[in-house]
Amino acid sequence: MIVSPYAPVAHRIEELGIRISTGRVHTSTSRVGELDATLARGRSHQAYHVAHGDRVALSDITRVTGKSDAPLLVWSIVIPPRTAEAYRRMGVQYADAAGNAWLEFGDVLIDIRGRRPVEEMHPRPLDKRSTNLFSAGRSKVIFALLTWPHLWEASKRELAHVAGVSVGLAHDSITLLEQSGYGKYSRMSRNHGLLDPWAAAYATALAPQITLGSYRGDFGAVVTTRESGEVLVSGESAAKDLIRPTTLTLYVEQPDPRLPVANRWRADGEPTIFVRRRFWHAPDERQDHPPGLGLRDAPWTIVYADLVSNDDPRLQNVAREWRDRHADPS
Image (cartoon, rainbow, N blue to C red; front, top):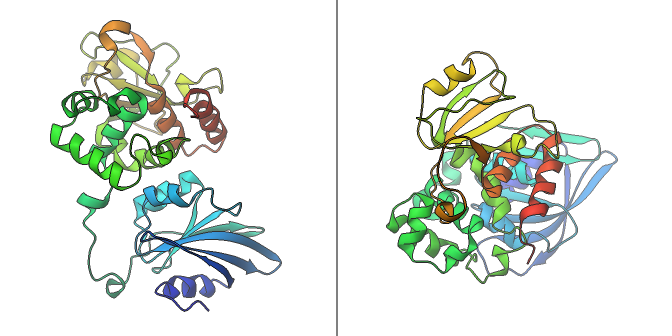
């Protein structure tokens, strides 16, 4: 049994018939602690590098990733559903004190969702407005910095214009990035350290706010309209050289109800076509891609986020290949 503030999490895991043995406790200067632990059930066992804390944010994951060859496991008093979904997309297993858990090793597969936390376990609510690095608004700023890295050196006004946010939010986002260890010269901003958690959070943070409609129908030859302006293709339909697409994701400048009519898309049934509002203004648009009608690919970062957001298992390898093709490894 673990004697620590996170004993309730360990207790929940043990209730599932899983034995826990702990090893080295790592020195940590952050609010997130680290230790080695082995989970076992029957003949199956797995060594983990555990990150534990009252709240383990996606930005914290980057700090501890790569410190051990063992897979990462998060123990937290509270893991909100959106954070849990982002963990899954990153392949990070987790458990919380409410009993939610995703554990997978050997012949063990535990997937528990939807349990609400006990109130007394976290009497002081967190101020998500100040702590959520990957909120919808800040995700726009991070997207701009990932797509056009020179914006780290630009004025906050230019960054805000490209990201489609206020100057105040652009300044706030840069400040929080630097406080979280993601400054422009930080190692954590390179080697996918900022890209991966941003992409994992995209499906639940920003994408729902900019989705205009979902449809089903044929998307072999998309007909654009003057009102919708330039249409950008994303997701697997932008990676046709890597996979045969079964869905289509589009970004439009302006909502146009005639777009689905012109393409004979239907709003009933299982959707395969997703239309979203383009929120950004590319800094190089005038020189390289003057606005107009027709189709072209969305920025590679948005394509990557849409690939990661898709629950189709076949797309996970495609997403990694797409990332490795386009991301600067330096």
